[in-house]
Length: 205
Ligand SMILES: [Zn+2]
Image (cartoon, protein in one colour):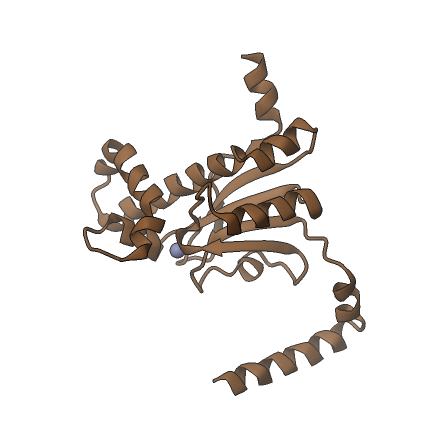
């Protein structure tokens, strides 16, 4: 299996260099991605592939069910690097329909450490219990919860001191919420974007 993987890598590298001579030499000197992607670890939702982006075009952090724990040093240090060092202007939180992490969070079964990890989703399910109860089938109900999770994650990213500091110094950064359909390969905008403008709106209130 690993031999096959290394063979495919060799073929890809040769093909890439033949299509675009000097590609790797250029990419090795610096990265200047336009997007920071926070998504689920699910193997069916690779950021570069589903967004049609090449190596060097998207900076990525992934975890089970794209949960934002505000004390997650892995996420926070990646976010800080994206904002302060790479000066990325577009942050995308991307969930997906049919998410196993969302399903686990809605089950009454013990999942070990995952139960701690997924606790913000369980809280969301409680918070939106009335809305979710209107949806008759389990799959659609979980997909709606996946959307709520993205919207909540966007809010949590926007509330980090990293984004608050960046906006206070006038940085033009937007945090978007998208959801990906495993059944059709399409990304949908959940229209929950938070950008520097929201601070001005709040100040005017
Ligand atoms: Zn998932």
